Amino acid sequence: MSDQKPTAIDPMQVPVKAGTDYPEEFAINVKARERRKLGDAFGLTNFGVNFTTLPPGCWSSQRHWHSKQDEFVYIVSGEVVLVTDAGEQVITAGMVAGFPAGKPDGHHLVNKSSENAVYLEIGDRIPMDTTQYSDIDMRTAYIDDTNTDRYVHKDGTPYKA
Image (cartoon, rainbow, N blue to C red; front, side, top):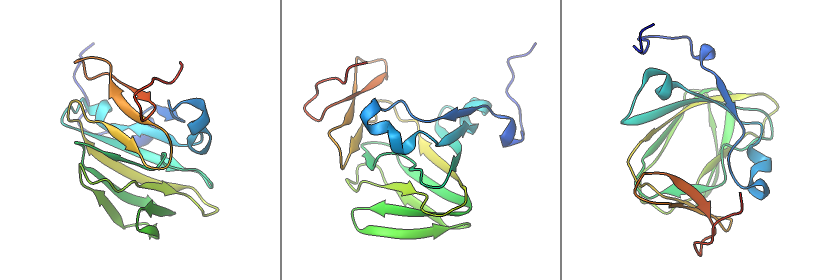
């Protein structure tokens, strides 16, 4: 069998990764989120692409921003509320949003509708990117120089596994 990655696929054939690896106290609003890691399915290394489904009431993440990673979101179907430091904005199918690296404007999507929302999220895979979480006592930090990160309190104290 070849290790060759496919050229074209049905995104629904990519396995679902549900929920989040956040510490338990921050996971509840994100638990129903479903991601299909399309970038991984193709072996992409410079950027990632996730095909994400948010059921009603679900959040995309905790509100956050990245030190080095640009992010881009395209709403495929449904509607979500984009929450940033500026407030809330409803975005619907066909609309896009972008978040430049290093801009400390925490953002996330919330599905306040009664239907699933589906979107593509695209971001760099720049080594040693860190994430700051705007509304909670959490950020990411690197264990060593292997580009392996973990969640820590803002003072650097690790969360218990």
